[in-house]
Length: 277
Length: 345
Image 1 (cartoon, rainbow over the protein chains, first blue to last red):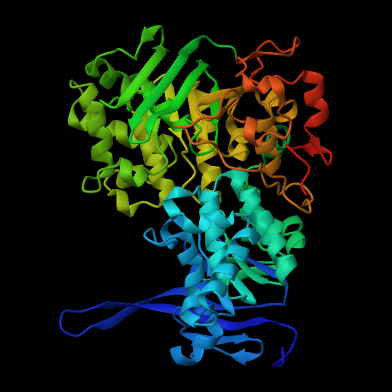
Image 2: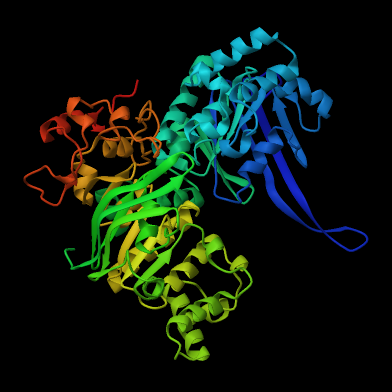
């Protein structure tokens, strides 16, 4: 895609290797872990790409390399047409507010000693963009938008349920009005009934705010529900990508087929029929 | 599937003293596990499903715990039994498999030695060589390739799936009548989960091993269970066989759980049906039906907790705790042509 083209994010030949070093006085690189080994994908504005893979497939490493946390070993990451791979921290800083991350475990990713209002408002405060009163207004509006009560501002993370904590994580990611949101397993630590709430919330927020999502998960069912396109990762590579329904209904790659066949069907008659076939 | 009852739990209540008051984790649970069947206990976090399983094995005993009711294994009461009796029951008569096999093995001993040790602890007359032979057989039986060599491996040398197979081998070592598996596949990748579920289903089929399966996943239930008990806030709210639970569910909470499970085998709905709100805090349960605050179908009667009993004349073994009339349930549980709790906004 040409710069200023139709993709918000365009990743080409992304590689992230980790050196394995051994040695007593002088460290030598004896091997490399090829966590991400040359992947390419692109996301249009307002759309969702689902990145699916099992543990060790490299999907989380890929996310971090895209966001330069830290950057890739090689390859190109273009955001709104401009190359960001290899940018210095100083030059990344103004871009950070436009790409935010939601994590799997809101318990571990929220500072337990800060109140919710502080956690959600911190990005604003660091930016110094708004006055105190204005910050508080923005935080309360954001809490309401993610389905919390403005009064939750004064609570600590441990006083909230898992679903509420994930809503706080989402509010914190959205407070700076990013264009790109990278969500790494955002619902996999949640109970089934709460998963549906959070998936629906992410859907609504995308519609309202025109967000672009890179949605990373191991559960291909959840990914199909939220994604327009799906890329399936295995051992650091993308084995197949395409339209979400098409990948799930007519997978071409043997690994994708295996992944889909392994998902238990919550319908005993169908599950038994499949087992016999 | 109507074998004799091996394990019978009646009126089980488990409470823990906490800073915030008495936490009633299990509040009157009844179920029976019959020979040769897989009974799944389904629920979300805080439903009491794991505490129930642990209490059966005497693992929740502590000064701060208040345990009431009855747990009978083959007619023998376990709740008041001595620690020595329970130690014999665990392993010899009831095998256990937990979610994370990494924390269930000692990391510094070889896996085969740990299995052999478990055998010799209960059967002191078994020689070391016999016990090792038995470990090799067990590894082979649970599908660990090259068992002769792999009994010499350490836990960290196994993948998650292989560790879970080793855990199952250990659970089977003394040929128990009952297997309790608490979220045995939750920590595994989905392709590995499928293999472990096949293994558990095979053990049930071929050895007639009665299995109590604790899970949050209706997909797992559909693959391996014969009967299902759905738990919410420390109580069983519905119990029935697979057909009854999946195709004629009586409790709105079951509708909600089934509805919000993502289905890869169906066209995707525009929105996922959801259950609003969150499970109640166990130190402050609502009066009456605990699901009432989240239930769009709640009405006046729900201020009292209904008994767990059969409400359909044609299905005496299908029990639930909901005041709604069966006819009203049939009409209300359909959401956009599927089972669900409420129409998505």
